[in-house]
Length: 185
Image (cartoon, rainbow, N blue to C red; front, side, top):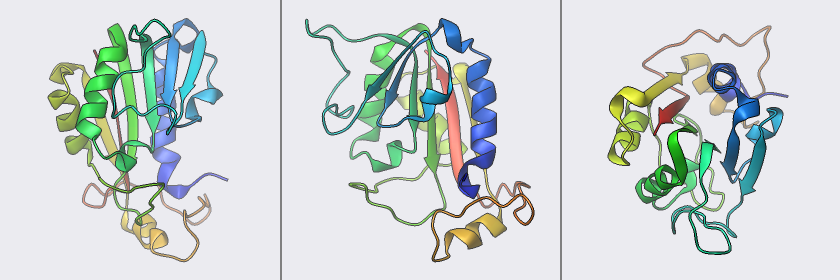
């Protein structure tokens, strides 16, 4: 079952990541498992609370910052108390030319796991990434949503399951449900 909130984001994001040549990439994912669908050269998961990206970049046993070609964060940034610091820490962990892919909700119910702190539109994500040191011309940001999806988000069954027979994937720029971005270091 796929959440209606993520159908368009996942399709677009898979295309972005495939365009990077996944089998050539050393990848880290922060508190998620979305990246397990790809065949990366290497794949490391950093899970909270053992690893807190807000506290600093992840380091190896010698205290050296771990470096990656791609870092993924799917539906995590809205839970961070210090998302700007976390984004700067991700930037520090990227190899030259490396990428950071981040996806976040916009119009969905509050969901503390353990916290629920922030929401971003595509423009807001781009601004966050710029403030963290990513060059503006290296950022691709998108958002998707519509009123039907927004209404389903208000229902008892959450998150709403995508039904291709009844759920429109048309985009209404004035009703974003989620946003995602890819930034190149």
